[in-house]
Length: 206
Ligand SMILES: Cc1cc2nc3c(=O)[nH]c(=O)nc-3n(C[C@H](O)[C@H](O)[C@H](O)COP(=O)(O)O)c2cc1C
Image 1 (cartoon, rainbow, N blue to C red):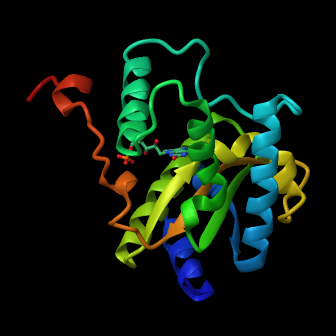
Image 2 (image 1 turned 90 degrees about the vertical axis):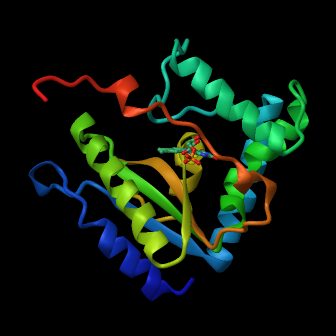
């Protein structure tokens, strides 16, 4: 995936609306050797965290703890559906750890994007980043590429800071794998469910 195409997709994604047009997104795009180096260091850090040698701390909380219904059940379902497709049994911690580690290879994608935000910004700007990420995913598909947003990178903000030109106030929101889909891969046969609009929306005056 050549740099002009990545830039084109980022330019399209940046047409996303943002509150008062603040455009709070920042992106660090990696390919080739810099991507491979970051991946290998992240995989080491991933193993160290598993063994308890280091403790990772995310710069933000994605989920509340404890999680509650109906979100807990949905989260569990997608996890077990995915591990089921991969033949990973419940409790097989070693294989679950290895599968989680695939995140740090950007699932083999040729381009890895690190999306950051200035930590001084507020929740509104995080909404804007969500708009940007959705635009990025759709713009990629318009160019026959696929994406996976990956919050898995956030707890590794400090390691990532050593690899990309992030300022002191920037924190990692997520990574995004960008590449061509491998339709033969079992994991890509996963079809996730959605609640219908009638379950999450209310209507009046129609
Ligand atoms: C902000 C964000 C972060 C995510 N982080 C990860 C991640 O770290 N690893 C991963 O494999 N998938 C990640 N996902 C993908 C979700 O798990 C996935 O979108 C969801 O299960 C629905 O599946 P679908 O997109 O295939 O419909 C993330 C999605 C979003 C929007």
